[in-house]
Every structure is written in C-alpha cells, then in structure tokens.
Image (cartoon, rainbow, N blue to C red):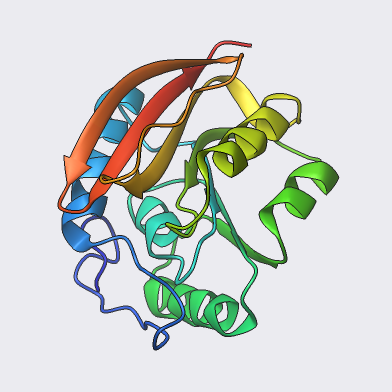
Length: 190
C-alpha cells in the first residue's frame, strides 16, 4: 500500500496484520479522481476519514493538499499504524496539513464532535456492517455539525451487498465499482 499522488507520492504505508481491510490503491485512485473532479482543488479542504484503519485514504487527501485531515479508528493497533503512517507521509515535507487521529467508535465521535465542518467525509466500515447501521451513521452525520454546506460523502461497501438508502439530507450522485468495492457518492443537501 502506498500514497498515489501529491507531496508524499510513492511512499509505502504500514498495514497491521489481519486487523483492517485497506482500501486498495486502485480504489483510492478512482475515489480521488472522482473527488478531485467534484472539488477542483484540494486547497482548504477539510477531510474526515471514518473507520480509518491504516489512515491510507485520509493520508492520500493530506498528500494531495487537504488542509485538515481527521481520522477515526476504534482498534488501538490500527490507530497506532494510522499515526505511524502520518509520520511516514509527513517526513521531510515542509508544508503539510493538520492531521489528527481519534481513537474510539465512530458513533461516539459523531455525537461528541464540535469544531469546523468537513468538505469530504469518507466512510469505509467493516463489510459486515448492515445497511441499517450505515443509514444510522449517515442520519447521525446529517444532524451533526460535521458537514460543511455542499459537502461530499463517500461510502465504500462490498459490491455483493444490496445498496443502502441515503437518508434525508443527502442527494446520491454516483456509484463507482473498483474490484470488490462499490463506492457510493452523495452531496449534502441540508
């Protein structure tokens, strides 16, 4: 696993054994191509990576120029790998955005979050999460202070699962398949 583009392009990332299912390089490349076409630029972007695992998706955003990246991961070993990967990505780079890795459950983070809203929120929950669980998290996001106006939300799911329903406040925009992963994109319409 490596950073695909930006200031840390080509840097190899650590992965914990059998704890996470990292988003593949191919999927990350496709996700960021879609996001870049929507955003135009990464300057000033605040990016939230929920169920971050190794932090590869959030760190890709940081490498591409996101101003703020925050990652949320419940597993302590994966959280440490996420923090170690930030050290790898930021090593030797003069200007790197702000990065924070939060330990704990995503629902707890959403309930207690305050501060600046995010332009992009990426969710990559364990594949065994039910559609109902995904919809509950999205509903909690919609009523939180985490979403900037016109924010983009992307959710990675296994392509073999039936699609979830976007709750009120989100407008589905596209779906992209990358191997076994299917990524759903929506814009916020709160």
